[in-house]
Image (tube, rainbow, N blue to C red; front, side, top):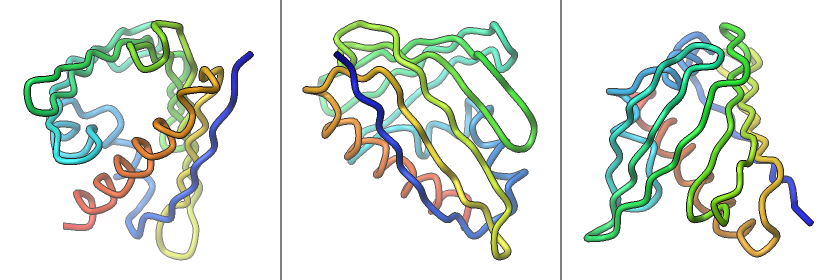
Length: 138
């Protein structure tokens, strides 16, 4: 059994900038890690392209890997997501972006999560989106 997670956040910048952030490996180092951790990303931002994001918290390093399933500028990015925190199972993340009130309504849907991992992913993605907002709002 798996569970879907949906998180929404309004980001007060143009959706083209929000969209571009999801395909910018260098920029991801600022925001693609929850808490006080750091991230590095190697990405091939095209449908079928692969990525590797390494998140480091102290001495603990976690690799997240996946493949881009859909890239529709400036409204959608979808990719598989696999790590120890998905019990090494392939899950699917979709980021939808809609223009709204002078900014962007972002909806992140993470599908096929192991039920025991949903709360941790909710906390992690919520913090990552907060950091994305802060990075883009500078």
